[in-house]
Length: 139
Image 1: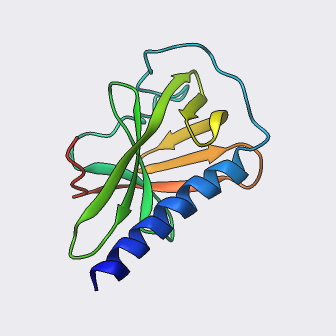
Image 2: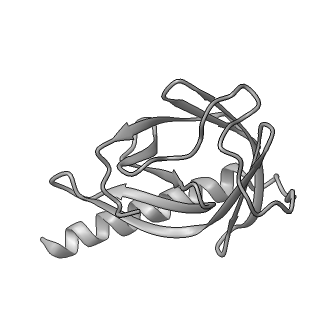
């Protein structure tokens, strides 16, 4: 049973990173900023507080953007538990979000926050995330 849980977690993290790699493959560039802004051009806040995460609609995985610029991938395991892994860093400038990971390098997309929805638009159809609370990833 433990193997199944571990396999599910690994598969979900792999899918999240693969979606990012495919979705943002045509985007590149970095603003060179090390201090992420907390809001997009419309005033929406991308930063997650303790217990919050942006979850891709229709999945059990997503991202946490910390106030210190860390990018964390998260995946639901079971029984309300979450797996988390620091994937890299991020920065924002206006409505541009730049994510830097070892796996995918530097990718820049347009982001928009509206209430509890985050939309990332880049090299394909927009990806919509919903902010979920109760996600314990020990930030």
